Amino acid sequence: MQGERDRRTERLEAHAAWASQKPTDALDALRRAVDAVTGSQRAKLEEAFDGVKDALNAAKRRADGVRDATTRASAAGYDAERADLPFSRRDACFDHPILQAHHGGPASNLAVAQHSPDPAARATPLLRIIPHRHALPSLLRDLGLDRVGAELGVWKGSYSRRLLSELPDLTLHLVDSWEPVDIYQSADKQDDAYAETLQAVEPYKARTRVHRNWTSDAAKSFEDQSLDFVYVDASHDYRNCRADLIDWWPKVKVGGLFAGNDYYTGHVAAAGVTFGVKDAVDEFAAVRNLRVYVTAGNDPDGCCPDWYVLKCGE
Ligand SMILES: C[S@@+](CC[C@H](N)C(=O)[O-])C[C@H]1O[C@@H](n2cnc3c(N)ncnc32)[C@H](O)[C@@H]1O
Image 1 (spheres, rainbow, N blue to C red):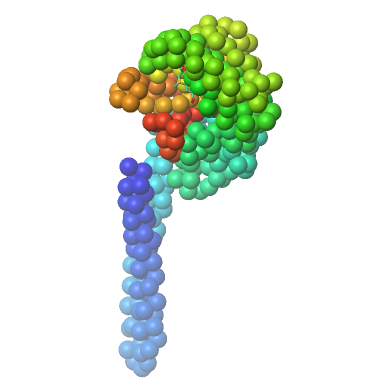
Image 2: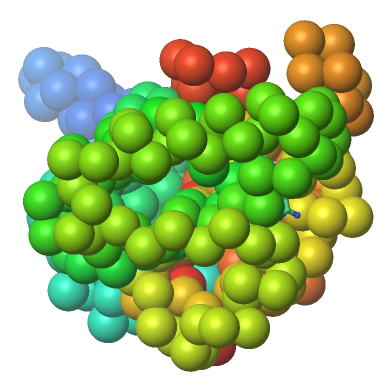
């Protein structure tokens, strides 16, 4: 819609500019023609020229008026389109100190977004869009959110290991029941996954806190605003994912990042589960005026993209 309106406005403005220039061109041509005439006819031609000049100047004033009105209408149209947008996912964090602090830095596109006269550039996402979840550690580092975080849903600890190995200052809370749940039905296999996790994070043991617990219960042992980030990857059905978002959002500090895996709603045959993550995240974000960023590509180890949200306020 925006592109279509811009093209229409551009055509109108070009036409108005052309129409405004036309009388000037015509008058210049007539002046040259009159100047070329000598002799007795010249006085009559000068008189005729003055008449034509008045008419053309009047036409030019009308054309100028049309051009100015078109420019004003175009600007008003653009403002009206922006005014129609709720002050929400487009610009919710725009003036927030978190983004201002990263102004011009690698984590943020704020400088581009804020200063460009181009509406398309102003609509640029304010945080960097990462290709997929393997790049989340570098985004956390760039945002200075690499000290203390939690991963909900750990399974065999492969993503925990990635976070811990790429963020050397990170203390990571690993939260998983390792109980039969969803597709993880067998208690034996969950015990094996727990053992594998301990092995995976062994080199980072000093910076690892393991909570073998349900996410909803574990949340009670964390202070509000105590975490730089929370990565949500436990139950993927709508109801439980929604509960995790509600329980864990307060644990993220203002200026922190809330993120998660498998931003998708629908049946995932490979998992044998109907995911409701996208619905839960979208609904959560919409009621709080949050902007949801989505990775450009799918998780290289899984099915779907990741989501992330910057917490600009409580
Ligand atoms: C998708 S796996 C986690 C994968 C891991 N984040 C990774 O990227 O390697 C989901 C894990 O969440 C755990 N889980 C599911 N629902 C849970 C809940 N309500 N509380 C605690 N753990 C849960 C399961 O036991 C399973 O190990």
